[in-house]
Image 1 (spheres, rainbow, N blue to C red):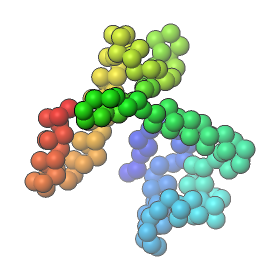
Image 2: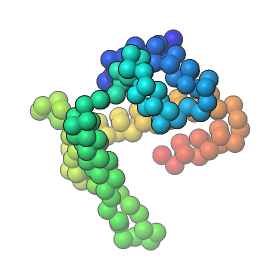
Image 3: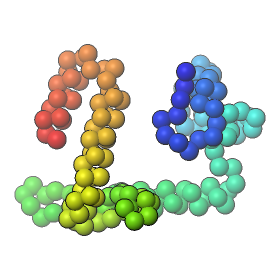
Length: 152
């Protein structure tokens, strides 16, 4: 049974999963092939997962680019060795309940926001662990995971 990991898709996950299997059975499963399938099959469940209004799609893409900018901008800390530090982190506002980007220096000085950041880090680590859990029986991968865990 297929399910969505996060909200945002109105399409039936089981039907989408079946369509993805169909694409995979007919060759490589790539983003390009998934998009092409949806374009050619407007009655498919995958079709529902895409924004087909070009104006709206362009805006959403630009918002995604803005998000990528905010997630990617870093400060280079002049130490030996040189380190890069993210400038902005995504935090839920206690006033509005909306997520927005805040300077990490401000977040580190606010106990509630700092706790959110720690919780997010734990969730990210748990997601990473879950993602590779099926491979953990391999000794070399297990050692890599434990090494990362010790450093965190």
